[in-house]
Length: 226
Ligand code: CDP
Image 1 (cartoon, helix red, strand yellow):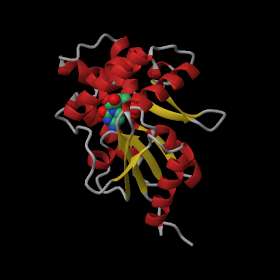
Image 2: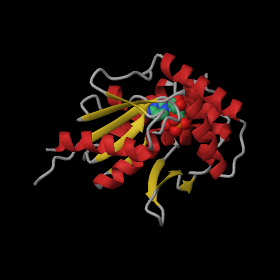
Image 3: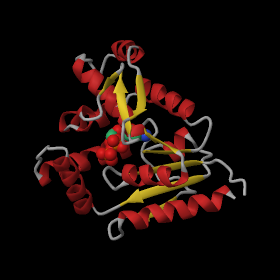
Image 4: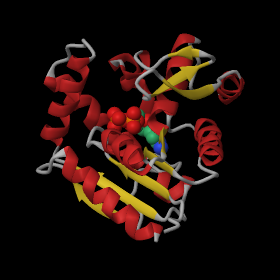
């Protein structure tokens, strides 16, 4: 059977399992996984390193022009983020970046540049992309849209464990505060705020396992591929 290549858009709040699910769904379907959040995180790292004044649109645009973001597969076939040729996968997950990323992501110049890049990356379809505005702005015609949610405490606990696996010990309170702040900025910004697309399927990951999440998205995807 000839299966149609589709675009799968996974949006939702911070740390509710979007990336982990998206990666595994991409593996099962033989699709490319694109982490749009990693792109905003890489821009944030660049802005922090260059001490960019976020209130100066000209400076923002100038540094953006010197920002080249790519993804490469490592030896385990996992996608890693590169900024101007350097592997920044670990650095972009630090709290230093997490604390600034939502502010940087409100800027129109930043969003225009990232959305443009994301559309290019998804042009050939056969992609799973996760983020905040994928089903609403980047690919409003995506064949499958998922909106993920989960209880705050569960999200904070999962994120703290992820950070610990990367040898970063952060208090649960601090993790939770960051998620609350980011959700607030992400849902209230004027440029493509985080919203559930009307045609998205909601998956609440609070009480389900990762395998169940993945199976559900794959099942929905297959129904759109025939
Ligand atoms: O993995 P986590 O849920 O912590 O967040 P992420 O996907 O790495 O995204 C980090 C931040 O980038 C978000 O809190 C948003 O501020 C921003 N972002 C965005 O504005 N639009 C996207 N499509 C993806 C991320």
